[in-house]
Image (cartoon, rainbow, N blue to C red; front, side, top):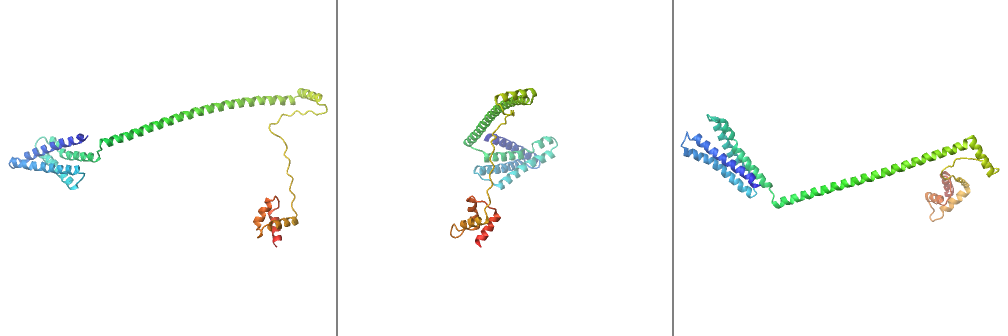
Length: 285
């Protein structure tokens, strides 16, 4: 993976340096001896290469210098500027020179990408651990999905069975209710009919002489009458005063009205709040 980022940067840097050197020599070769122009071109490329080497050394140490980065970008911009000026002043092949004028800036950008890759690169052990964690998470998610699907299918089957059983019970109940309804209708018709009613009366009279026949439909459920509760007679004022006084002085010190009223009703006695408070006031006075 390291070669995938460093080789393009190295190749583009070399091409940019060659192009810059050639343009400087061609550009300045007409105005000065070509060895001087060669020195100028090598100075530009050498300064760029030196700043790049220093940046790589700092990156290998885990350090970074904004000053050196700025100087490196300045050399890249100078090289691109030289190519652009040569392309604009050349008599021919202007488009071709403009097409390669961006190579120094692109080479600097590729070195920036390579530096970012080095800062975020992981060891094969860490990459393997991350892959293992991701695979475990995918396995757990797949198992959870399968479990949920199985539970959903089971619940659907159970609900279908319960629904079918409920439908069968409802059909049986409806059928039974219909049969009972027909039976009650038949009994009611037999009881209220003139011919059948007379026949039933004659049979009842022979079996139980002296008893008037009563043919009534049965009623479902208990029909035992509940005896009515007899009202509790109210206590006279004298007896009420005696009970209040006894309860009040059942403890020492004497009970308060609230405690006395609670014990009065707990003993099963009955009196309205107005009469009970009036009795308390009489006894307390």
